[in-house]
Length: 206
Length: 256
Image: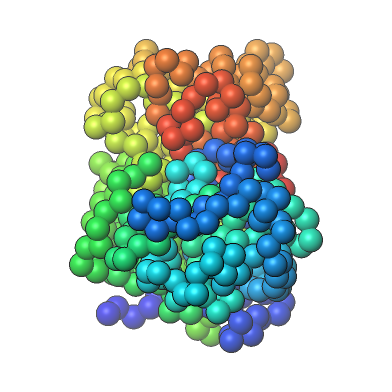
């Protein structure tokens, strides 16, 4: 390896350094909430919205907006980390945990070890079930107490905050159990298959 | 969208590589292009970006992503950087960086917001501000390869002085009857300006894009507000959402 070139005169402009145990490597803290998506923002009305839980060709559960709203609601406060380098601290989300979705579908335990999330607009992302259970993953409908704006993934998005934020897929409509892992949209386009921000798994091979 | 691929063997890691600044081009009052010598560069596709990493004397490091503005045909890699006043990296790149300086980058990154001359059909590009950079890589690539598919750039800037690559775009359009460049200046227009003077709206998009029947490949890049507006208007106009590829930058409230 070459020596890392020093940028003469470059220095941190941050007034306060974020604590190292809170900011993953290569990230910076923003107070804004940037928007990143590969295409136009889908506009889905509540009356047209459903969320499905699927295994192979069969439906394990399906909820209308009203039915989903009637499921046990959980509110969490989490830090989020985008692969494009920004992190945002203390974001508050409300929705239904993956555990409660399984319960609502009458499942004692997850039938397969992987999930593919399918979204309006054709976006997909793959996540190990292990990273969704025990409160680690949710389908959320409110951000800071308000309905999530379409540009930020509303009416409902996935929330898996311990992975890079592209895994928290916007406009989620269907969660499909898979026996074997498959790659989703960004995962097929050079991004890391798992995406742990603490290991800086941004791109394939990281 | 894309075919789901089976899990392949782990790809080679995109390693950090040293680059040297060969030349700095002043594009506008706030924007410069950095022409970089990257001896280990393996090539890229128009539309892709890189991560750059700066290291301070005390070891502090900062990473940011920038689109590549140069076509794959060029020897030097061009990054076009707009200065964000309260930013940490862009003021350094725009104000302090000199030819001969070195830093690190890795890439290319991104395989979706990409166009090459192998893609048939009309090409519709919509840019706001420095969002022109990855689209310029596509136009330069098209020009270097002498490809003459119908192409159209709708480019929104605050004023004429803020138009990046203005002379090059003019020259490109003059030399190519199949390329049309339409400017709109949203804040300030020079005296005698006969062009558009408003933000991109439905009418402007309908006039300065190909009709849905021609199934153009559409790329929109700019601040979030412009991209959100343009992309949903294009869907309203009848374009297939899957043919519209977007790239957004800047804070969510930023407007050109």
